[in-house]
Length: 159
Ligand SMILES: [Zn+2]
Image (cartoon, rainbow, N blue to C red):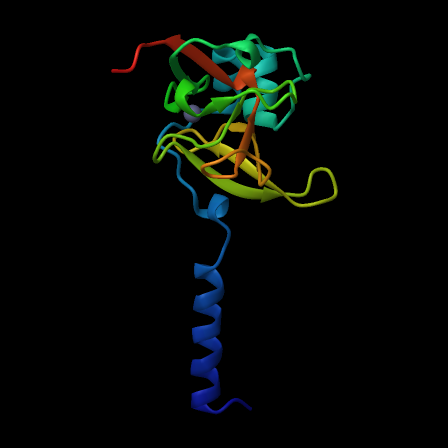
């Protein structure tokens, strides 16, 4: 039989475990649509990437070769995610950046390929964007490997 002290300890441990649940389990995104609504809003390839964590074929997105000054936004909810200032040519065939805009993306861990990768998704709608790796250039050393089809590009000149 548990003493009073032991049962309190058990309760406290239980509360701690709930607080440690991974982010997506508790996430409430500002932009939330049903699967049918997303299907209607997005092109089939964008739906597959943003809502089903698909990966576009490398070198398939025109945004990979986009060299103009401008803003890359989420194709799901239009939140600005990256600018051309942190874009670099990684040679992978996917648009690559060394840093996102502030408060634009959230990270998660996935094991879809049988090993751990850090998944990058839109902070506002939860849409899957790609992954981030530790082999990027200075100053961050990060390589945000994005699916071009998950983003839109708007040319813009920065002062
Ligand atoms: Zn979004």
